[in-house]
Image 1 (cartoon, rainbow, N blue to C red):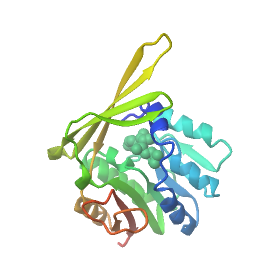
Image 2 (image 1 turned 90 degrees about the vertical axis):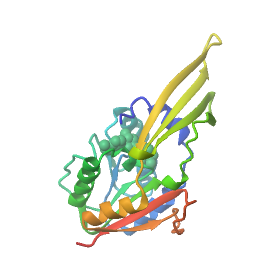
Image 3 (image 1 turned 90 degrees about the horizontal axis):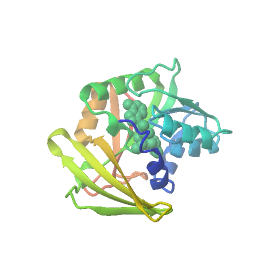
Length: 239
Ligand SMILES: C[S@@+](CC[C@H](N)C(=O)[O-])C[C@H]1O[C@@H](n2cnc3c(N)ncnc32)[C@H](O)[C@@H]1O
């Protein structure tokens, strides 16, 4: 999915989202060497790590997302890469590869998922860790109702969701309203298209590529339950 159109909305929605930062920072501190982030967006995580002295390679296909990150992190040790996680070759191995905040929900087919994991395996150093977090699909409550998502500097954002269980697809439709000079209301519409993973689907996907995955229900090692907000995975190569 192309995030170019979503970049401005995304910047406003997630400016204050920090729940996952310490989790990825802890892993980065334990890793020796640079960290590779897949789907790095505007650098929400990459810049946080870089401010702590971690060298980060930030892979992001959307020019609008990437340019915001490049601008914000001009003096930081982040190397931005315009690439797709299904098809990249950096000729370098990393002790830690991360895909924070649902980035893997943009792998829509089994072929996409396998291609990305094959690329992860090819770029992970011996003993390295692949860590990512995904929405817990057991929490999806897509009843179609329109809800207020938030207010951001004069922008009022509503959303409704469409859940397609047969294809594990979740469509989030946003309506972003803003008063423009002259007194008119400008409404923009955006759709976020995500394909969710189930718990054992992730486990099987990882195992088939020689990884053992450990699942937590939050960023501090909480047990995974039906009510957990996240599936937080850390995976290592075992074969
Ligand atoms: C939900 S955002 C997460 C951004 C960032 N990781 C964060 O935590 O703020 C998902 C990102 O994945 C990127 N993305 C989508 N498809 C991708 C692909 N095939 N390869 C790499 N990145 C992709 C999007 O452009 C978007 O920036």
